[in-house]
Length: 254
Ligand SMILES: C[S@@+](CC[C@H](N)C(=O)[O-])C[C@H]1O[C@@H](n2cnc3c(N)ncnc32)[C@H](O)[C@@H]1O
Image 1 (tube, rainbow, N blue to C red):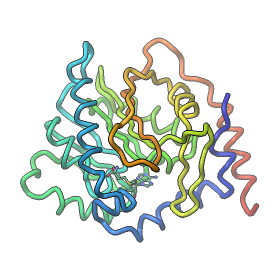
Image 2: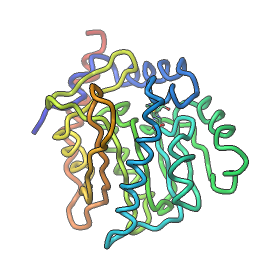
Image 3: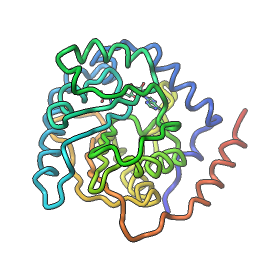
């Protein structure tokens, strides 16, 4: 079993989330803001995602193409350039309401019919409508969840997937097998091993996995995962993460 993130976060869970929200409240509502100054990689990112989703759609067990959810959507960059091209309808969930206000302008009237709901809520508090989505897209936001909320988020969202629905996760991965904490934006970057362990604890199996290519050198490796709920196995016991949650609370003020 690898190290868990929650032990590393030397603040309360509430502070972890409010510090993250305060950070994003100061970030410009632009593509460059969403990508931490790396706005120029947006097209390459979207191209890699398009190829990945096309492969999933032409696999033996493809998801439907009706409804997608964009998680940690920001101003709707992925909704605009990827999800609305593939799905009939897209909902967005994002903790910063100002980004969602900007998303309404950024997506423009042309995409009006393609956009469903805007949910201004943190993923740690999000509950989807049951059986609504063919694909739930989660990109560059899971580092803002504690391990416990990461698992709970996927457990809750499994109920929001249709039969044969998928999660697609696209995230930075550390290369040294360590968890790295970023105090500036109050997020963590996880190693592959931990990510896989959390997927397992959320009762998910990796259907497909691919590394994003053609990103500049010197940034984290980025991986895409297509995940689906395991049919047969019981959800792993969460008692481990409950213990860690208690430890985390005890860290307040240290
Ligand atoms: C690096 S940006 C990525 C935005 C978008 N996924 C993209 O790739 O263009 C991270 C986004 O996650 C949002 N975020 C941070 N913490 C969150 C949370 N707990 N729940 C939902 N969204 C969150 C931020 O406000 C920001 O819009």
